[in-house]
Amino acid sequence: MLWTVCILCMTTLGLMFLLKRLNQPYLIAYIIAGVLLGPYVLKLFNNTEEIEIIGEIGILLLMFFIGMEINIPSKKSLIIKPILAQGIKIVLSFLFAYCIGKILDLNNKSVLLIAILFTFNSTAVVVEFLKKHGTLNTAFGIVILNILLLQDLLLAPTLTVLKFWNGENFKIFNFVLPLAICIAIFLIFRKIRHIRQIKFSSTFLENDHDLQVFSGLFICLGFGLVAETVGLSAALGSFIAGVLVGKVQAFNWLEHSLMPFKVFFVSLFFVSIGLRLDIHYLLSNYKLIVIGTLVVLISNSIMSAIFFRLLHFKWRDSFYGGALLSQTGEFGILALSIAYKTNMVEYELYKAGLGITCLSLLFSTLWINFGTYFKAPRDKEILHKKTS
Image (cartoon, rainbow, N blue to C red; front, side, top):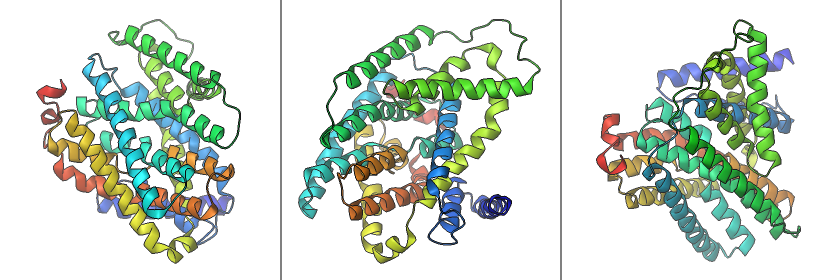
């Protein structure tokens, strides 16, 4: 085990130093490390499912930190616009998937799965770039973040539809309960959005680092567990925990205590994405995978740019937003896995979809860097009057 961990750290470090010189995000290093050390190249990691499960904790911690850092929007325009944007994207995704289905002569289940892949983006990738470019707390960044949160809300009904289509009994309760929880969350956020900090004296955890670490992990993972139990995504639950904790002055130590865990587990999540890439399948079907990846990146970028423009953002901001939302995300991989395990899609389509999804995550980092040429040179220019 020590050999395995040391080789993983050495490989990741080497790639990180290289990408640092090229001014590229470390996410690429994590994915490439997973590919190199996975079961299809060096075969250092053969049981990828264990790392996938551990890596998912990274997403919960990432969403928790986002919740702590984000300011709850107080203007209706910053709430309504993401709803309209995601609605437009869903419509465009189904239309585009329908066209692909007609061209390739696919059945309705495959068309539905393709539409789902276009609907979900990667929260981890997009948020990392928003933070890197300093636009997370701008009006433009908040709209994009709210779009990603809406996608998290859509995960539960999407998975319910997939299971129902495969023959499981439909239960209206699976829709009603998450909807009721979402309404309650909205009302809580509306109540606390004007509160800068909630103050109460607490010296119990003040100087005890061990208690701080485990209390923070319990809050983050506990909220994720509760959200998943009631039918929402665990990532959304951790985000809610982050928003609430970020308002409490007594928990200011949490960010410092949990940051190393966040870096480690998020890196494992992206390593797990690289582990899933079947290199032999990619090489034998490289034309299909490359064309499919380019179609995903370009079509997602165009669809996203269109709805940003329809929301009255400038064209340069719309193209930048389109680049940010160009990839298919981790929830798309989850939907793809469920569809395969429930025999909704064949093995070939599952492998192709998985390869295209993973490569879209990898190459979207380069695509987003290209999209920064369209970004307004100063963050204040993004906050033009129509988005205020």
